[in-house]
Image (cartoon, rainbow, N blue to C red; front, side, top):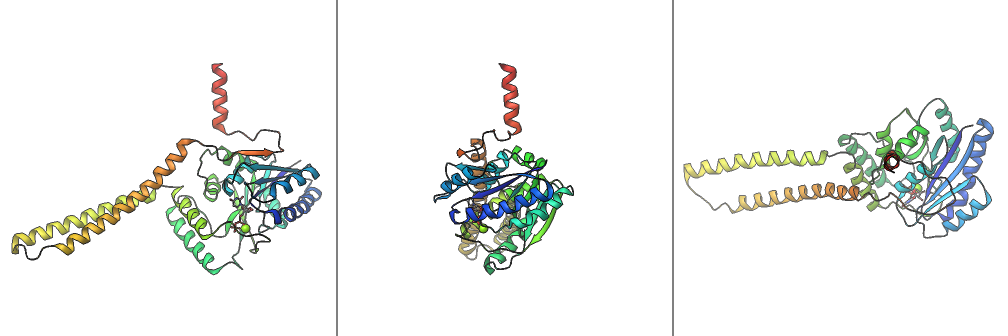
Length: 331
Ligand code: UDP
Ligand code: MG
């Protein structure tokens, strides 16, 4: 019997949890009757400050299919999804937002595609009803990102997807700390297909992604996946040096031919400013990477679990596995 794990990251979603659970349950039961599926719900409480934890405890008491993981603080949606994938015991999982923006009614359709042999079924949303600025910014961002990134990310594609066991294991095996999941999903690959759905407005509460978060997310997306910005800086440096050299030769020749005419205050100050600016940008970009190295070498866990009703250990990643094997031979 195929078992599906329905993973829901939630942060301050007290008003949506019950509704989300009801909607999920209806659709999970549909899957159970039509396809004979077994199912579990995994709600990942990402350090909510509202009544979410209490509601999750109540739901867990009512329904044996209901599992939850509560983080000790807010670690971000990326970490919440990662925990869900690690803890999932199903042969396949689906990740959905708690705010009903990812309609659970699509699950049937998505599972049809999974049964056709796809490892990743992505639900792609249209952008109706979204703030114009945001749509515009997103479009520009995806255009730009796809130009400079090694993995492809597409507009309107979020984290609403069905993942096969293969993909879940692959994702759980990636040890990196800075998890830009859109890039990771795409990087992992496997047989992938997309279905479309109408954009849904958030049901209750408000979005946790202000412009500031989106901006940070954009930078993460660019810097987490390649070092091309560094190379661009090097090229810029080469061009600037070359042009400056030509200019210096030109001035020098001029001095030889006609002597010093005017003190070169203007050219001097502009050169200083130009170089200073470029240096600052370079240092900033180098700093980005150093910052990332800093976080990666710390090897901090991606999340910490405060409370859960799941007894079995999460699927271990390869590194831990090897470590245990190594220790085993020493003892
Ligand atoms: N979320 C989370 N941790 C966070 C922020 C958000 O788990 O730090 C969850 C949130 O509860 C929701 C999903 O991620 O289920 C998407 O968040 P939101 O609706 O705020 O984003 P938007 O749909 O506006 O992009
Ligand atoms: Mg939302």
